[in-house]
Image 1 (cartoon, one colour):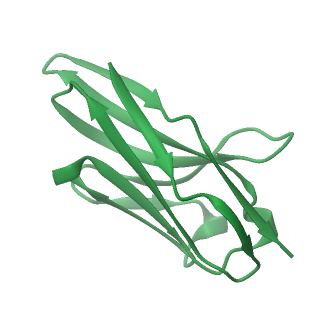
Image 2 (cartoon, rainbow, N blue to C red; image 1 turned 180 degrees about the vertical axis):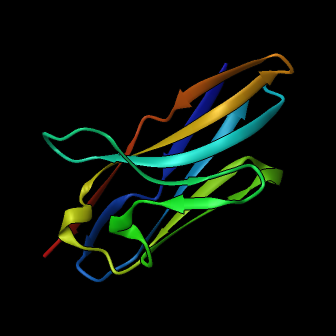
Image 3 (cartoon, rainbow, N blue to C red; image 1 turned 90 degrees about the horizontal axis):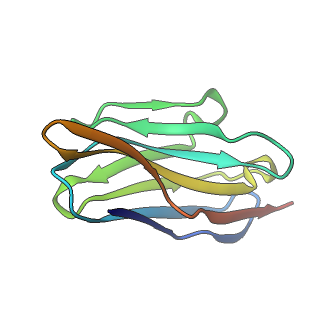
Amino acid sequence: QVELVESGGGLVQTGGSLRLSCAASGRFASLNAMGWYRQAAGKQRVLVAIVASAGNTNYADSVKGRFTISRDNAINTMYLQMNSLKPEDTATYYCNANVQETWSRRRGYWGQGTQVTVSS
């Protein structure tokens, strides 16, 4: 079993910054692509940013230039640096990982979510 634990959420004013972390633990061979998603109240969960195992990244248009996704494969941890935060960034942020459990089996996992609230 694999566990993803997010941290770093909180309350910040417009224009402020936060850094989210997602640490993977448990038994697995490796981590493939990892990503951050967010879900605002009453809305669907949407992709924010994704990072491949080699480091390639992709971002939602709404966060380009403000958010930076990264990962440290040595410690199985992914990060999301969020700058110039806006009230519309308010949401629960979820970590997702495509986990290579064994050489022949991969499975997707979700973290429990961390709340980010941006006050105007």
